[in-house]
Image (cartoon, rainbow, N blue to C red):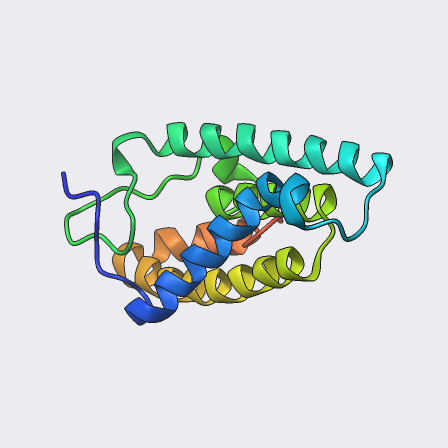
Length: 160
């Protein structure tokens, strides 16, 4: 099993997106060192709640992919996952990471953190769009039917 596939976007942009994501996810670690910007018990508690929920959802999303987990676009044959968290969003891994980043931005409200989050979201949205084109080619009508029922990010099944 190849865990790494082809990058859906140019490699430097992919690396920038992953770095921005990493900065945002770990930004709270620097808070006590040199980044006092804005602090509130309410935003910190809400931030930790989002961070924790996002992390739990991330673990579940990864677990539900099982041996189908890939970084990039796979060359080998895979199956379309439509159960579990994939019944509510076509991108539970990305959504869960966005929730973690939102939590981080609430824990440490700082322009660098919020900017890293926005940059990561923009780049990963571009990745998602490329992945969706790949999935449409790979799975055809199965993907089209799934895409019509399930939102890209968050929502409810459109046919219920």
